[in-house]
Image 1: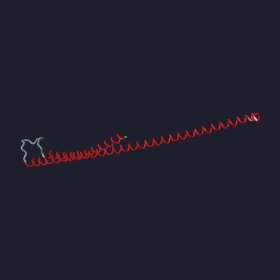
Image 2 (image 1 turned 60 degrees about the horizontal axis):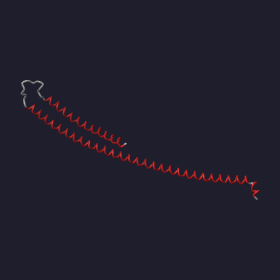
Image 3 (image 1 turned 180 degrees about the vertical axis):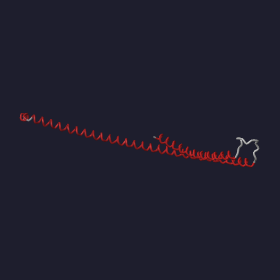
Image 4 (image 1 turned 135 degrees about the vertical axis):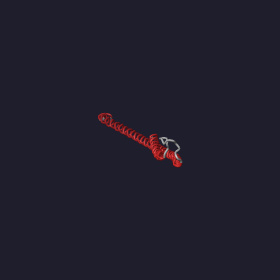
Length: 166
């Protein structure tokens, strides 16, 4: 019986080698598929982590921008209040000057000129009226200038806040 098997030894060796090769192929395929599944799980975990990090960063940036805008709004309101106080002070000063000018006009028209000569030192009504006009224009200019300064300062504060948030 061994003699009969010797004739088929090459066939048995070929079948055995094919079986071993098929087993190795199947084991390698299984190992590769497990490795691919692990790699896919790692990629999915990395994507999930990157997405969570990006969302957290976006929330942080939004929070910083909101804080910067709130600070800029607060600073702007403070500038408006300061400007309103400055305008009120200038308006009081303008009224006080206007009263003094009116009093000076009344005094100059009521009293005759006692100077011996009527030179350029004479404070006539033309000079007082010009001064009053100048004072009124100055008051308007100060009010407009204060409003513009508030707007510029508010915009600058807002831009600084936005740039610091980034």
